[in-house]
Length: 214
Image 1 (tube, rainbow, N blue to C red):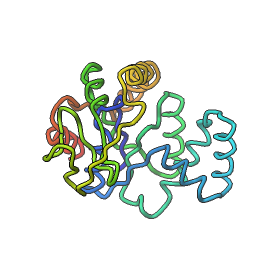
Image 2: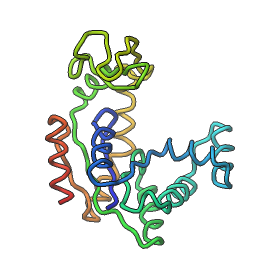
Image 3: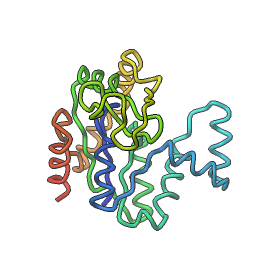
């Protein structure tokens, strides 16, 4: 089963993708992770990507689709994948569909996680992680059981991402609405788009996603 989870930053795509990895044996494919892995492997695609990134240029759609195509051909993706961070435009969506068709594959579901912008800002700006083990917390929604002590490893140092601030989040939301939202009608027309209530609690969002995949 091949999926795309769509939604603005902070909608909970990563959390739901990890659950689908555990329950359905799917592999979450992040464009950033794929690029770094390809560069580390040092093959022709990786070298090309490295030169483009070193020059500070945007990755061409054709190259990104080729990298995705190579990644999904590996044995660990046999059960299917969850794409995260791609596509962002209709042109990318069309290129992705063409590549999948060439491999005899297709997207089974594109799931939009709908969340109100104001709530997203609150969600993202409150996030922080344990500096030692990386477990995530939130100022309002998920605090450590003992203040200042990580539930998982007992660490006492925490960190926040520099870009998890209201100004940056608002900018990223604006970019999402301008760039990514237009691909929703594309997938609607192809009959694969469904939406879930990303405002619900995590378990309820999971239930809604599972109902779509059933």
